Image (tube, rainbow, N blue to C red; front, top):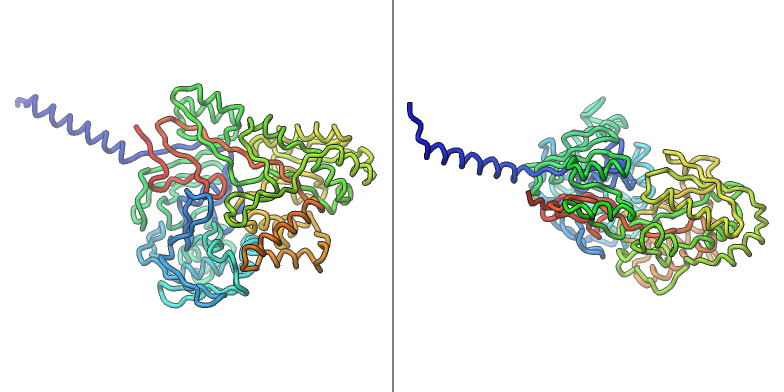
Length: 527
């Protein structure tokens, strides 16, 4: 039998075009990450590492424009809402939302999701609830696609709290059916959910190896715009040199946590580039004030005054980081006021305070991990020299674990991320009366001047509905913190991501730190 040569060429040509089209429609991205979490649960998590993994797969009721620095809220899983009273908001839900397991989302899932955080029994949720939802009274179902959220008192950040990661919506029936009785949500169900997560976002998590690998695949029943990527895989590559090698060899397309001194190494490769921004997070040093060594606030103030933050910025970040005026971010919007400051470098004053405190040269242990924070160990080493200049001896303690809750902890590097765009969402989650460090008992606040307690001052700020009053009270809090010195801010780091030049992606200023946002329009690949 004879073969028509022209016809064969046409067929082969069509197949080649189809193959190219298939490749283009099945775009995949591979990410090499410095660290990864051991679970995926938006209600449980409260970490820098975890924040990168939620936005693609989970969603809150109220959305926010990630491209805007200041908060701009809009519909997400709730298509509209109205305040029925100063303490009650009614939200109308979308009717075309499906979870990744195929279940439709209804008001029952919303009530379950929020109630597990407002009135938690699972210990990790109890902690998050204290930090975020202490003003929430209850959530109730009105009908299958309408819910009401009630607060204990009027709340100036109610919309914000319905946008945070910890209020993302999860499937009730699926979670209850993971272990034990399918009619009851048990602690074991929530533990199991962290290993087999299901959300409503544009990507389903199809593979998860705790602490090592996470794979997103495009979810065809997603209610919003379908993303261009078919698949994205994140793999842990802990060492910086190994991440750069993997990028150069084409094993990954994006790498995280590139320090400034490695940017040139990447940019000299004609196939690669770097994207970065001042990440909305502060690196801080905090002190265990109930440790006898650090009990005197004059010593803590001296340790803060001895740190030359501008020098740290130049030496570690090539001047790209930001030394703030106090605990404030531009993302605070109307509550951002850079016209005054409490952070200062004054070694002479530090020496004077050390003398007043009777510091005798006893070494102060400073804990850090080797690679968790970009430039973290280098910063601690530089601070050791600065402290030495005023007569303080530092003993660096490098451990690959969190030591902030250890009884014998003295000082430690840490971070205060911007979890949502308000002082409550950064300073508050860590240092309010229900924040992480007070509940962990590393700081027992003294009574501020003019107030019966620190809680009274905090609540004046937290619940005022007047912006000018909130600004006034927040300044009082910051001046009080400068005097008590339970922590000191080092800088707002400039974080960088290395990537191939055919990848068009960059971090967005409206997100919490380190989010990998692969939604439609936020990443393109030219291959």
